[in-house]
Length: 398
Image 1 (cartoon, rainbow, N blue to C red):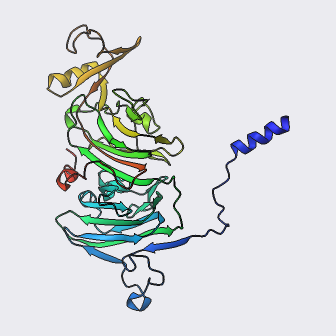
Image 2: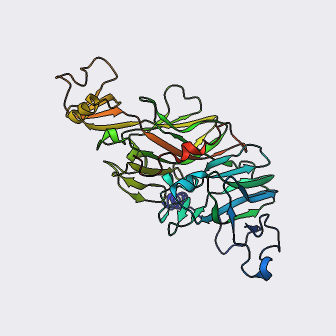
Image 3: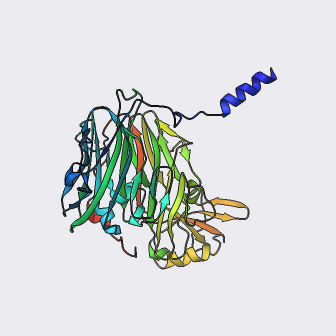
């Protein structure tokens, strides 16, 4: 019996890889580039007598380039690209769209930089489980993206200037059959320049269907009127499968959601990180990918984050007296947490308002890129915001 129990433990605890590297697989790999955008067999490297002939193209202001347009069943395994202008404004003005199975509406529509896990267009060398930029000059995505009837990827230059150099390749494989339970990849970006006081920011507006939230890459630019106060008290909420006013899944704080605690500094890890932590300009960028802790949903999914900060009582009083928009919600005192939105309590400026750490609603500039899978090739989410909203305040942030 002891040996049997040991064998069961070993089988349960040890996970074999899905496919050994030395095992042959019946796949047909393809790379799409400007020289061979349809990845036609035997059609690569034809230009300039098979020397370097067509590695890049310029993209005029207002122009759209097609990176991939194929018919059939397959799975995209990697997307790589680079551009000569990697300014924050250009990375927000370039729009990437992806269409599956002939759908008229894109499943993916996002600013180029944000799609590749680069909030605010702040490039740097990094690598996480889904994206990388080895030296801060290129963009890689390793999210698998299956399609059954076809795939089309485009990039549109919505800036007012020409992009001189655009390089790319899309690596995919043809397959005989995509599994029946395979979901379509989606990505949605949104931004609010000034969140409504007391209202949570939507990381992902509600989507209907069966699917999985893969993760979010989100950022903010703190408003200068909040001074040196801490912005990251907001809790992430996941509303799934019939949740009403209150969600089933709730976190404990912004830095907690990305695996840190007691404040936040710059770090880049496999499934969670804070690549941008610039207190001097107010720029912050965070990400969390739910790979081991999968977030599946059966009917719908919506994700939000509270726009909450914190500071000591006297500092909060000074901000309120100066007209800074805020609503106190809790006070941390030695005896515990006082919930100011329940019952009757003294006003902030009253002499008997307790001393301690005050958490309060605030109004900030938030953006978010949500990555998710869905059981249909398109979604009902709003179209990507205009370029003017995407590129606003991309300089100093103040």
